[in-house]
Length: 221
Image (cartoon, rainbow, N blue to C red; front, side, top):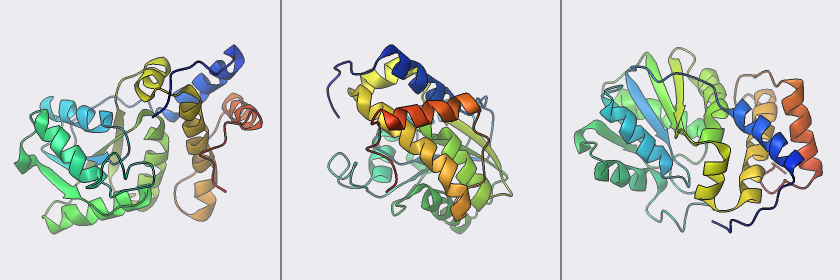
């Protein structure tokens, strides 16, 4: 997705780490009724979901997602379809997987997966959301707004910020994505898309500083 040239100052890296850590919910994986793997550019979501399935934490796994401008070339048949294939390659049986191929945003990931499960006679009381590491908090806030009756556990690939940057190959792009997701955590509740989340002062200051420094390619217009 980019090059691995180092572009951040030490202060910017410190700020990015504050935002990265804030995005993590800190949930311990535990047994749930179903898991939902949220589609994206990151196959680590599918790998992590497969690993958690093999740990016996859920019997049913939904992959959800169509395409976006950032995934169309990587996953031409849709995010959920490619995630399913990756999970099959990692030993998850086809009988355990449901595919929701139409969602275009996180809200639709939640509501269309809920509807798909219901159409298959599954009405869970606990759900694990498997996402990119920096999307844990936003996915949690979205699910709590749109599916408040279920208990939510968040999970993601257990990577630190430096390792995630190496995987993506573009340090500035990763920080842009961290900043963009934090903007959504802040802004979406006022639009009714998610519940409000407390943002500590140091995290908010880091966000504002990174925006001033130009990490803005993933901000809402």
